[in-house]
Length: 173
Image (tube, rainbow, N blue to C red; front, top):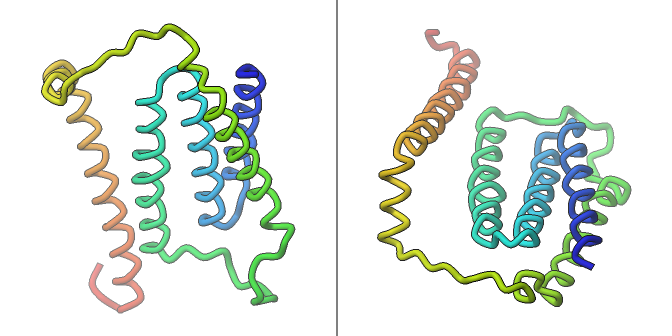
């Protein structure tokens, strides 16, 4: 049964990612990308890595997607003027509802089956002190590189958002 769940989650991740790439509306793309991240998190859990699954949800589906939404709002990206102002129709909601229902179904099956509980996987405990020591002593360079990348992304988003506002206000470049 776990094999079927694995393939279903893999298909969900691929389809949701393809939908994220092909959408014209950036907010719709982010919704599909979050759906893909949740599928990947459940794949990690299924493979016996619950901590990585939790990080996938917290960091990628949470923090990074909030950053993307912030950038979209700051740049004021819009999908263009539509002739009908009534909102999305039922056909536009169908893909995300199907993917979401499949994710919820797989989640319930994983909670019922708990593949990691049936195996004799030894439990390993790392205190916060041990985890922090390994993270900031053995992987200090990687942590600094990632922090600089996030800093450059934030400064770049601020610059792009600010440059658009100055042009409209007639300010100095």
